[in-house]
Length: 314
Figure 1 (cartoon, rainbow, N blue to C red):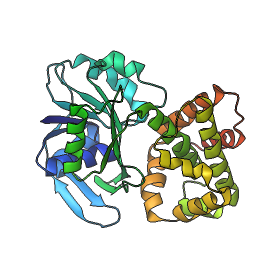
Figure 2: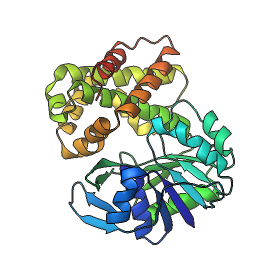
Figure 3: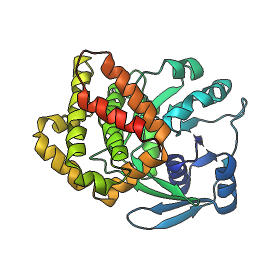
């Protein structure tokens, strides 16, 4: 299978390199300084917890041409970058399938228009990290929390989505196939956006967040409000295990976030990503606000955290 990973940030670099390591025909699309780094030094991965470092000298390109042909294009860019690359993907009609691993809680009409319903696959990464001086420090999230999640638009477990899942598993990523990826992504935004905004309100420091009882209270209240909005709209909480956030006593949930926000794990997958991707964080927060405003549910904690995000741009 011939694969193009479109985007050489943390996640694009990680997934491309891991696929390449296990023998797949993978090309990574990078631009500008990042392209030059990869040509000169390869894709350098370093486990955030283990410290293990690998150097992957893999094929890299700067453009996707209209006549290029790939069996699978994996789009791994920030949500705020997708609109600009849709014309390039639309012009490439030879590639068989295009997997958007991007959080999009507002539906897929623009993506369908660009690449066609028959080619569109959807998903989300199960990893996080940072990139500095050409080195990607990454952490693969426990599958209990968030496996690499994949889906067909119609929710079917088709042979091709099973094949894609198998490819990722071969590269060391636990995978899950969702039958309702739109609800999955709305649920993800409903709790991740308040977490990111609370991080910004704490000055971009997880340890400070752990010491701010006012922010922890706002964070937990905002997640409760967001999930209530989804219920009002008839959107199921997916995966269902996340319902526990609103079933537990709020005091216990605050304690869990207090303990988690002190850890290196939280710093790697939450804090560093929030600080590096403010424009995407703002987009997701704006989108969550729009979803909330489509109901009559009051969301004072969610609104306050959103305002913190607007008042503390990075």
